[in-house]
Structure formats: C-alpha cells, structure tokens
Image (cartoon, rainbow, N blue to C red; front, side):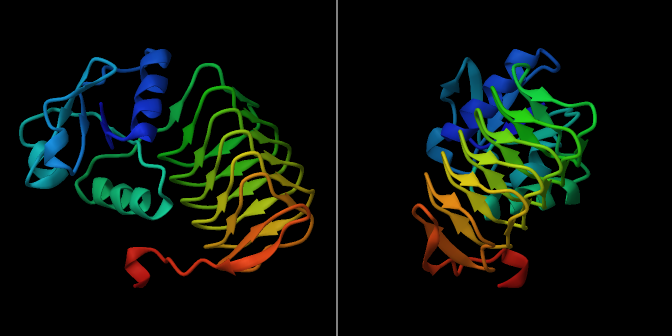
Length: 217
C-alpha cells in the first residue's frame, strides 16, 4: 500500500494504516519533488515524475490510501488512481466506532475516535476526520469532508464536495448542499444552500464558495 499525500493529513492517514496493522505501507507519494527522500512516521516519501502510473511500473501495489484533506484534490487523485487500475482503499482507524449497519463506499477515510451510528451511508472518497460524531441515518455524499469534532445529528445529508468544519454542529434533518462550507464551530439550524459559506451561531451565509471539481471547470 502507498499513501498519496505527504502533508499533515497524509501523516494522519498513514498513522491510521499503521495502527490498523492491516497492510504494509511501502511509501508516501507526493507531487512535490522537494519532499522526496524524507521520512514520515518512518515511511519513505516518494516522488514519481511520471505520476502514479509510472510508479506502478516499479512497485507491486495492492491499493492506495489518499491522504489529502482538500476535497477537490482528493477527488482528482481518486479518479486518477482508478484510471490506473489501482483501487483507493478504506482507511479506518481501529479506535473509530462504526455500527455494523453503516454502509461504506470505497476510498473512505475514518480517523481516530470517530463515531458513526446505524443507518448512515457514506459514499466514495469521503473523509470523516478525528473524533467526528456521525449519528443515525445520515448521508454523506461523494468527496465530502467532516472535520475533527464536528457533530452531525440524525438525518443530516452532506452534499458532494461539501465541508463541515471543526466543532460544527448540524441539527437533525438538515441538508448541507454540495460545494458548500460550514465554518468551524457553527451551529447549523437550517438547510445550507449550494455553494455558500456559512458560519456563526446560528449559522448564516457569509459568502460564496466558488471552487468546483476539475471535471466541471
């Protein structure tokens, strides 16, 4: 296995893989050539000028864990890995609690101390970060990200590429629509419109989030 991304998030993903003892992590791939040769958690940082496809000519890999927090870059790497025939793997820290009635896609990351309760569906390439609480019957769409210590109460839907910031609380049955961003510590009591930024207690719109995935640009 390799981890793709040698930043802080990649370090946490690598740590989760090491803690799970489910695979051998043979390297951490990064696009920045200046990071090549460094070590993170004792794992060598690799750089491949020809990208992941060229690296596959020299390494016999079973999968890749995408260690990138940015939803849009993570989605790009997810697609690139699949185009190379390498399946993104689920990374689940052993201290996370998942109900056996949770449905998971592929390339999902669930980090230390996260709690995910029954009836929740998590689509592909989603990140549930450290100590996030995802209660019953939530739905997290592709390439969304729930940040550390955020809380989704029952029946919340988080749209594609949306962010729920650290420490935010989303009230029951709320929809956080795609491309939107919930600020850190926000208390969300009403639906969040597509492509906006909300913050505060209660959360109100404070701006637009113009970024879109590469395939739409």
